[in-house]
Amino acid sequence: MSAAPFSVWRAIGVVLTTLLGFAFFNALIGVFGLSAAVIALLLFIALAVLIFRLPQTERARQ
Amino acid sequence: MRLDPEVLARIQFAFTVTFHIIFPTMSIGLAAFLVIIEGLWLKTKEPVYLQIYRFWMGIFAMGFGVGVVTGIVLSFEFGLGFAKFAQIAGPAIGPMIGLEVLTAFFLEAGFLGVMLFGLHRVGPKLHFFATCMVALGTQLSASWILSANSWMQTPDGVAIQNGRVVVTNWLKVVDNPSWLLRLPHMLMAAFITGSFFVAGVGAWYLLCGKHEIFGRRTVSLGIGFATVAMACQLFIGDLLYGTMLHYQPSKMQAAEGFWEENSASPAPYNWIIVPDQAHQRNRFTLGTPVLGSIWLTHSLKGRVAGLKNTPRDQQPTMSMVFYGFHTMYTMAILMFFIVVVSLWLRLQKRLFTTRWFLRALVIMTPAGFIATIAGWYTAETGRQPWVIWGILRTADAVSPVPGGALLSTLIAFVSIYALFITAFLVFTFRMIRRGPEAAPDHAEASGSLKNALRTQVMNHAGAAYPGEGG
Image (cartoon, rainbow over all chains, first blue to last red; front, side, top):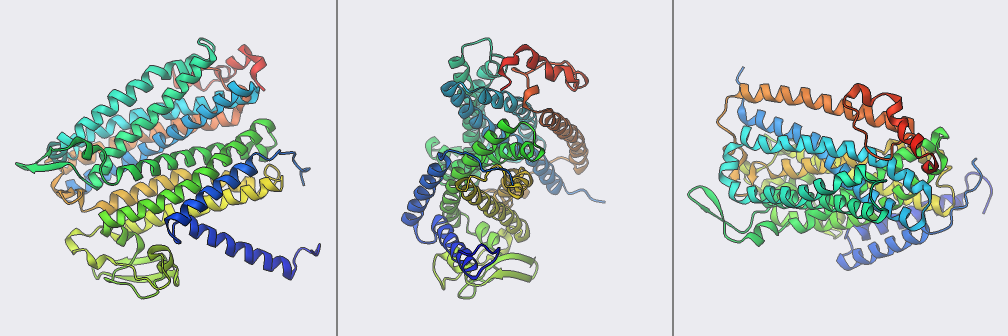
């Protein structure tokens, strides 16, 4: 990926991530039905706990 | 000028209950947080957890005290402003309020002293037990109040005899159709409120470059709890929306800002409206096309029912319900955005060093309080014109007292509550500014506000237990 502050690929990545996030939000609020909402909730919590448990060796302050 | 007793009674109750709900919400959230922190301290013996516990215990104690005092007033207001409500609904509501006192208050009163003053007087496990019991007490209290309020929203288990409510099935009164969803919705709201409060204060320390270890740990734990609670809240909120649409359709019709019996297909999602209740239309609407069908009907072309489905004399005021609901919903979306960003930053190991995110956390410190108050405004204004849904109208529940009596007591409440909130904010900001190292190991009885504000009171315990400062 280019080191430039802005690139087409990065912009596409941001748009795709946003759309993915929007779809996930809709799953969570029950748009795709109760079973999808339950799965999305469990997935979100599992992912959050996994990330929460990562060792937090901080990068240097920028 | 004619003083309308109904309007004044409603303003008075709305003012006092709005003020009151801030403190139980904070108490429930902070009590659960304190249980987790003390549990972590017992497990790891890391001094920073004891420091976090001591610091937040002080703020919890103040919030708890103000919450109790402001809550007592509400019971008296049933008599002062809504005597006919108390007369008609007393057989159902009275025992639930009484059971709240018997179970929750007695439990809290029994263990609060041990929690606040017993850190070095009882063993650590007994102290942890006391903290757990206080937290349980706050949640039991919420449970009874939510049961009583949910019964007013979705009454069940009663018959009307000689103009009064007679209980025919107590289980149905307590476990009414909306209670088991409204209770977790409120508890989650309290956990989120407490989490954002804690994370916001920690973020402020990190931005100031003070109390680095304390700040990092509180930001990490606060936003971590908020992440899980936010996801659960969106899930529960959606389930509750479906339930309320079934039992109180006019509330949800008003909350979404549609008037016509059926909206256009596909329906937009309304973000801003200027409703004209008299002409049953919106003067101005700003929304996102199609999103209303997707979110509200879970289909691409679904139509949304409007408020004209409800007879005019049974309609709530749309502007109040709509903006209450949308304030809550907008705050929820913002908080969800914050917790998702926190996961990304945590993955990048930049959670404590990204200054814009820390600033956002500080700005979002009161987000949970705003969302909770807005949610309660939706619940209460959406129930109008009923005080007990389908049974008793608010206009028929008001006490036969002159408007002047209600106005004078309203002025008295505003004056006294202004004193309460000022004292609470002054003490809280002072404690935050002094930082965790100055937090006492137990609550201090200073004897006067003037003494309590002196520096040596706050610093006394730090000198007594210097090794536990972290």
